[in-house]
Length: 426
Image 1 (tube, rainbow, N blue to C red):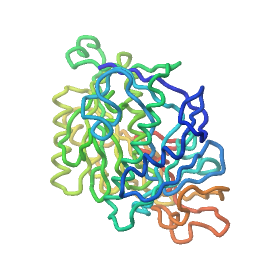
Image 2 (cartoon, rainbow, N blue to C red; image 1 turned 30 degrees about the vertical axis):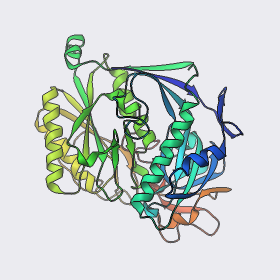
Image 3 (tube, rainbow, N blue to C red; image 1 turned 90 degrees about the vertical axis):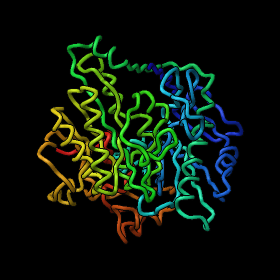
């Protein structure tokens, strides 16, 4: 399966009477975007704003971040199962608005959204401070429950990202990235001397607004299965999560999964990249056992020599992580796990809620309990009062002068467990 990503560089966003891309500037018709959001009767109001790198702007509470893309060649369309039919994606060509994102902001679960600062100390820790962000501040019918609000907010973000992506349908990209997967027999024939490597991608699926969707299906309803790596770049996986901001995998993270990109970069050189195994994170012990059993079984079936495992979340999912690790290792397959740490503000506590001697190769996204001080911003997009209840904050985190003192976990993407962040630990 071969996918080309045509990169349409976006260096600025401006409001205008007509939505279009002119050079490297994305012009957005604010009123049209509002209408797209408010197509859902659950949502009663929407404000649209812009946040650019280096500005004194704070966005909170952040729900999701989405990169606008459009499929211009090949089957299906971006975000299959939601914005398009469930045809298999991951082949042909997809144009990408590179350098911008749609950010959804709303108080779905106030304590499990996050902060994006576009400048200052907080900007150092999030990759989203480097993007030109179109921010949607969306309010629901207050009579609706949180699950209804979350779904409406999630779909509104996807609709707007699809609308913006369509602006690039007829554009020619100056830069094209190509990713190509081969079948298992082809890989064995082409790269007989290279170690066979797979990626086990753990997806948050604990329910209670901790959900991830694959081709429109909540992954907790699925057994461990496989995706071609290129399917991920076409939006086959989207976030529906209201989890701690620092290690949430937003939809943007999935669209730009750095583990997949790095494995592709080494494919045919130092490794034979076999594919991506997706598995869920569960609440009950029996479900954890079942999913991790299937992960190990699939790795053995594929005959891989090594596996990279990435986690999402912390605490309860640490058990899923360690189960996957030790069971795959028990099959004689080497593993590397990517996680983050909740080691206390002094870094002296146990980093994970579970552990095993098999987990001896670890990449960390850093300690989410580190306390940071965020300066006052001149402009707030969203609801600043949420800061005192966001996970990692406390009553009084928002200071009288507008600055914030809180744990690193309040920053969206700060300790991301795909390694898509700016921070680590040693």
